[in-house]
Every structure is written in structure tokens, then in C-alpha cells.
Image 1 (cartoon, rainbow, N blue to C red):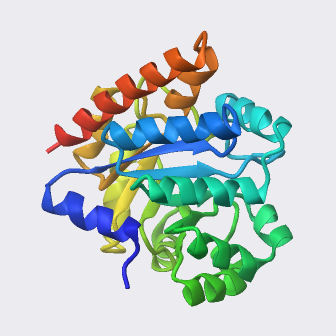
Image 2: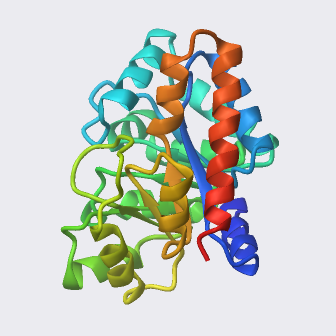
Image 3: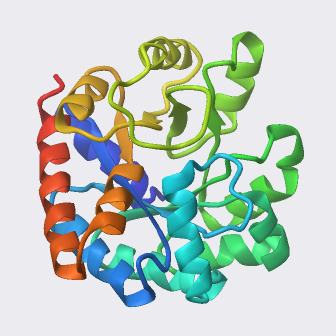
Length: 267
């Protein structure tokens, strides 16, 4: 049985376009505020949602996402709030995945985490710091509950190692467009196209590119060669800088609509 995430890529392939995947940490800018952001994203052309599990030592995240995660943690966001947010996004019609470091999964219980993802409509989990060599228990749990395992491939991943990692992915392969931490950038690394080309030589799995996309033009460019475009810091920056929640929601809507248009112009 396919997951909503897999169905998204079937749909976008038929429409000859890339999927737009938005990222927001659970509990940001507040528990209820996060739900209002999700509603706007769902109504503005976003295909799937990546929910961040707020973590105190986010090695892959840049200052914008770190600040948002800090706000969420201060508000008391934990595993129950993350799963509640997954359910809310799923019920809003968005294919939903969680991005989390390994420690929260291990602390919660590997099988229990996979079960709760499935019970709340979650389609997959992105685990940026989990290696395939340490994934046996995780793969067994996710297979049992029909949850996709999404690994991050960096530009430095080459040759046999690249094929080994992509073989363990389901749902999609997360292609990090550059070496470094998350964050909106004025230009997208020229290495992103090369990385996607190299990944395609190893798998027929959809490939989504993250790290740096913040404008309609960038979304269009990435959509020309990738199956999915992941945008996070650009949305979070808008919310952090907004004078109030209503203006933040308006700006999130405008950006989401721009990006949705961009992924449709890429081919």
C-alpha cells in the first residue's frame, strides 16, 4: 500500500512538474500558530510538509532553523506535540514527513516512534545523522509500520557509497544541494544538478533537493532537474521577522504561492 508521500510524486510526475515540500518545526511559532501556518501552506499550493522535531543540538541546521527550534522547545514542544502536528498536517491534506535527529527516536523508542508516525498519518522520516550501517533496527520498525526511510545524500557522497545509501531510501532521496547547514541563499549551488544526476544513475526513486531555495526563480531552476523542491528557512525567516501573526501568515501564503508557481514553470 502506497503512502500519501508516494502518491504525491505519482501525481506530480503525471503533471510533469516537481513537488513543493515545505518545512516547519513543530511548535513554531507556537503550538497553535504552527497549525495556522500549516493551514495556509495546504491552501497555497504546497504538496507535502516536512515537520522538524525541535532538538537542542541540531548539527545540520543553520541559525534560522536553530532559532525557530529554540522557540518551539521553550514552548514545551516534545514528541507528543510533534505527532499531534503530523496528524494535523495529514488531516489538512498534506503528505507529511518528520525530520529528526536520531536521539529523539532512540529516546522515544524505535518501534514506538515508527508506530506513532503511522498512527498519525505520517508518510516518512528524514534522519540526517543516521548512517545506513546503524539502521537495522530502524528499518525493521519502519518496514513493519509502512513508514518511508529518507536518508540525506551530500555532494561529497560518491561512487559505491552513493548507491548503497540510495538503495536504503524509500519515499524519496533527500539531496543536500551543498555542504554545510540549512539556510536560504541568494543562489543555488551549481553542484545540485550534478548531485541529482549522479543519484539518478543509482536509483529510480524521486529526488528532492533541499538547502537554500527561497525564491520562485530558484524553485523553477531546481524543478527543472529534481522531483521535489524543499523550502524551509525562507518560510521561517518570514515568520521570525513579521510584526504579528496575521502579517506572517499573509507573507507565508504569498511565498508559498510564488514557489508553487515556480515548480510548475521548471519544465
